Length: 128
Image (cartoon, rainbow, N blue to C red; front, side):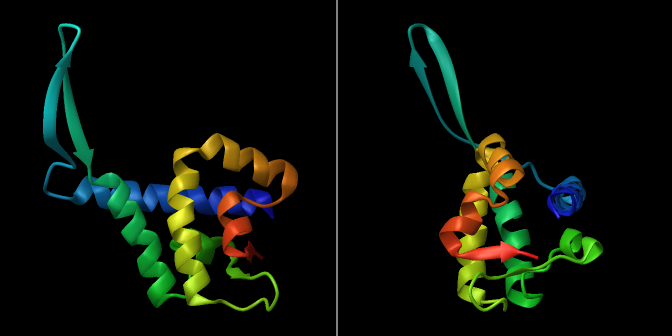
């Protein structure tokens, strides 16, 4: 199961990369700059994070949480207790997944050794 989950996530990241490559605008916006110890720093805002968030939220909303990767590998996200898709939990899971993506190594090791991820534990969902 964990291999299907990893492959599903990789497929989703490939799809997202394709979407990002087709966008006609820069994904980075300069929002400020400052100097510290004679070094200039530029603060940028990247839209990639929000596009990834929108990708997962759209599939939560319109396809019961089944992303393209999940469809290919025939897996789905369900409530731990009832084994059915619950939209509210899926949204919470997606928001927490964004944090998990940032700390991917920790989530990966939890999934590998404990069979769950941080976003699943706190949203009370599981992947089957």
